[in-house]
Amino acid sequence: MSPATPTVVDTFPASGADVAAGVKQQLEADARRFGGLRLLDGRFMVIQHAIGTPKRRGANAW
Image (cartoon, rainbow, N blue to C red; front, side, top):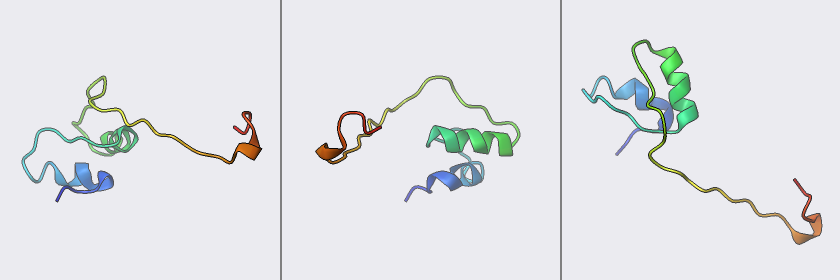
């Protein structure tokens, strides 16, 4: 089983891995917390999120 995102950077050096993947915001925070890490530019995956709201709220609900 893979570790949860908040623990990825805590566990991957101990396992001998050279690369970790996860949610960018969490990895940015981890890179600030640990020395000697860098984030690669770009992305390897996109998750398209959606949200629903009742029609009665109208088009300008957000």
